[in-house]
Image 1 (cartoon, rainbow, N blue to C red):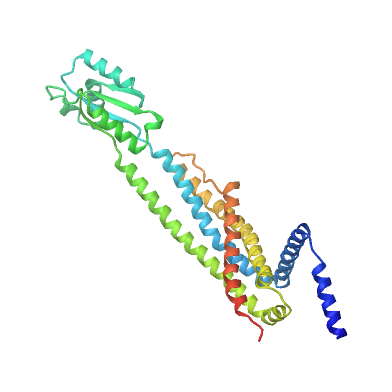
Image 2: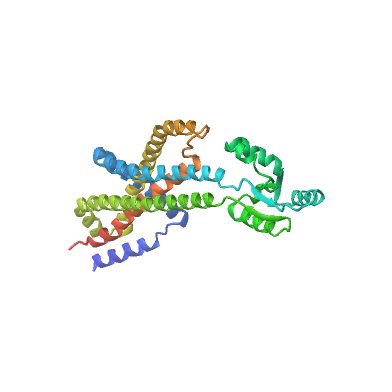
Length: 328
């Protein structure tokens, strides 16, 4: 009877102890900080094995990061090329001088047009005679077969392929114009090629990210199996699955943090290595193009992806394997 009375008193005393929400909040974060530091210490106890896993994670992210840099630079180059430089309007041969001047002024005042250049038929024939090498044959012509040409340079906001085509269709409707040309085929081919490169690199990057998740998950799985007896004892004394899983999640977090730094360094070195070749190639085309690497925002994104992949791989492993360990 005395034992039962003391047990009841103890339970009543335990129920009378209340912990404030603020204290529970502080204890929660203090416990998380302790487990985070402890998981980092676990990595330090096996430096070579941990470093190999982290290096695999970092180097696996290096290729997608480098491919992203290549795509970003290709978009920069294509943005410079992806403009309709000019539209050539071939005018009717029976137009009078006053009609030509009126049409030129009307086109020049369009908001879609930045500037115009008029090339009369005589100047065009002289230029053709000098550049073609058929000067003697051209002298036998009784009349000039070339029409007057009005070269139209679209305004900056109308130099994309789609808007330049709309301007072309609008100018073709003018009665003074017999035909008009705008070389858009090479622009469309360039855009299609850039899209193929982007989609290919995106698919490859996705596969490598999946590989990172699998590698981290397998590493965490082995760590859980190595601590199986410890986990069983912790569950026997009342530890929850969330409490047991937390150190392994922090391990995945540290994998991502350090792996992201390795990805930064490896990507920067790889870009530095190939930038010299890019400079030599651009010099052959009289260009001053320079390969642009990862900026600060890009580096933060790579770091966030690395941390996210590390957490995802560890979360998949702990959700499955920690719950499967039950004391008998």
